[in-house]
Length: 342
Image (tube, rainbow, N blue to C red):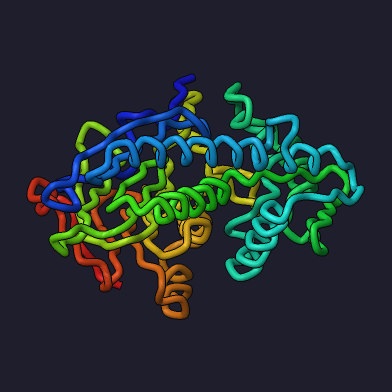
């Protein structure tokens, strides 16, 4: 079996052609490993010490939230919830908020995003990285313990049906980017880009008035980035079958599981990028759109104009892009990929 995880050099996004925010600003970079990925910080300001203390505070916030929201950390709210076996569990305001947000979106997208896939992830070995193709009987058993309607939240009390387990992996990173963004804004640093492996945030603005330029990497990591776009302060998230997968008997199985079938989603897309003003929402929507398909995604976007997409078809020949995004294909892909604006 071949195992693949998100690595530092294979991030879904990276800032390209990013110039200093002010003519005399200095560039400060740092990194850490958390949330099962490498996280890179790029800050611009005249005060290098301010950049350093800001990054240190960001790191502390990331560490705090990972301990709170991780499904595997034994002191986390999620770990306690998953041990409850039907009993109600008192959780923090942040955990209750994220679960409520997740359940609300799940109802809107008909379960295309679902935090109760923990048992399914275990059946496929994605939680332990001991990958395997489960028996149909094991998938059916896991499906009996899957479904966002099996979770309830009243105030700070969370209750799961017996045997159900949750995983906030599809929303926690988005929320953490929100909190990191707040740390940077409160610091008065001129501007910053933070890359969390599958999520990127841009904070502040350049003194020149220029926008940030971001690139979307091709699913084939040997091809580099294939589409670039300009943006201001924003959250960007991607989901794709190429990020985490294993192969068995020459068949590839990726980690984005359909909560209805219990199997890796047979998606119309190879990658989905969502751009918006909410970290947790863009995080959840990139997964939901990957599963929902083009028609339902377009319906959602019509009613939620605050979000934009860049979605590459499964055959990697068509790129569906929101008209609101100011971007273009890199020249080496112009003959291979057709753009359709939605």
